[in-house]
Length: 313
Image (cartoon, rainbow, N blue to C red; front, side, top):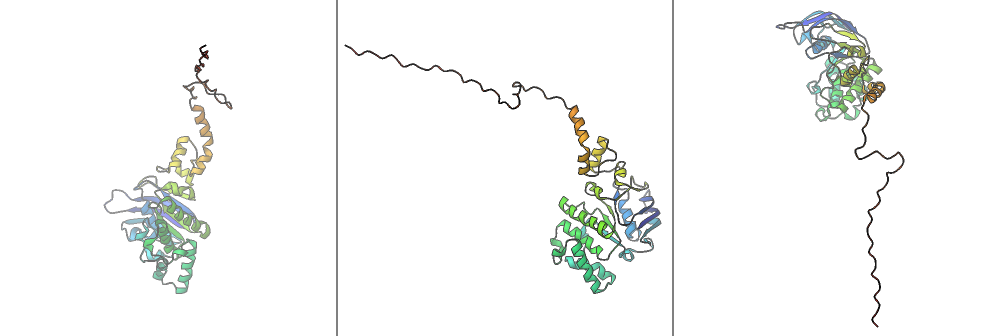
């Protein structure tokens, strides 16, 4: 679906290329997570897929990037809009209308689709993303998770085959992030959409990834492969993977659930290393099942009644 052929990107005045040696294929209908330290070129790589690099960002693109057979160097973003949908970190920067329904229809209006087609696709997208109850709501009154779902829906109505997301959950609370990730899984599993996303909060996403695309360092050639295998060598990783490395688990767990399953032997080892409990400073504990003896109350002298006095004769 997405093919990189010896791709590199360089910008004027930069001492080294922002991206170098990208030669791989992202499979169709999978969620591919882009991972790497800051400055490794993640946003640049995403931009080459959507056509923003080099058409809007400038710079020089060497090699070839094709999406569904279209060369992004010769096709501008507008000419890729029916194939590639792009959603950024800030959904408010993405919106151009005021209400949910109008925003979902805007992209199709730009492509000149027939009104009947637009109406059908809007209804399908509202149902798919759980937005039917919000169709008339002003976008500014929605929560962060709802706004991100609308942003995704606004590009889905054009029926793209590829969805490119740049840190879609980094600015969301855990509940809103779960809403967005549930939508992405539905797109991948039910519609066969290819999702390529970069995310800073790896602990939220890595367990759902089918593939990981690792950019190990700025200018280094990326590697595409199994999530667990690449997390074992990645310079950035979620806390649960760091725990797995520390415990010597290979491959490391990708979720708390996986870590809990594999932690039983570790708990046994830690129990053996724990020092034995010392004696109770107040005395030995009472035997199990028997209450401790009660102390006898202190004895007190009981006063006696005085002897009777004989009456005088």
